[in-house]
Image 1 (spheres, rainbow, N blue to C red):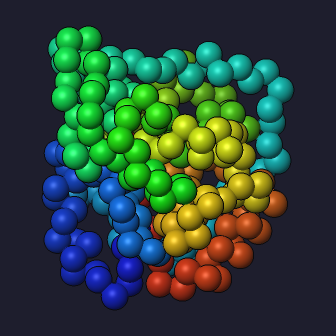
Image 2 (tube, rainbow, N blue to C red; image 1 turned 30 degrees about the horizontal axis):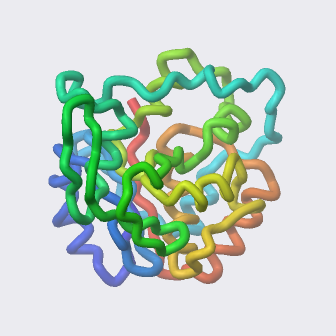
Length: 236
């Protein structure tokens, strides 16, 4: 969870809600984001200034050799195995500003979403991608020790935090591809503080490293985001 330092009481006041339901990526204010989990509120860490959160990230060279996307099984049956919707569709439903109609087989019609990467309103679920906020290839690069297949599947379908997965326009997601913040930032400049803090919170949640260029890019962003903070809960 990322909250403006001017609002500490509000941040703490809403944490119990995150214990039972993920929060959608719906039009956060500039410099704000949310990284929360389904864990008990008592385990949630205190807000960290963005600079301090970046300093908690281990620094290591990336290692792409051996990566294939199929190492990270997705999409699985989601939080509700009986609803007919996989993780991808559940995220799309959770993040709708106006809910779509859901037919058999989790076929979606109608609905409205805001793609925060490019500040575009989307009215057709087929034009959405569900992005892994830290891309799967970047996760592989950043694993400090090789993950098990189960942990990789857990990341690839993580709905315990509302920020590991995000519904955005297909065009913006494909522009991002597997790039880190040293290589790509959203075209929506008002989202940059949120983007940097959510990236850091997700890497901390999953104990992932950053390379030097990535760290320097994040520090540069933090200079422009002095009131942005990060709250994260380590993944199970």
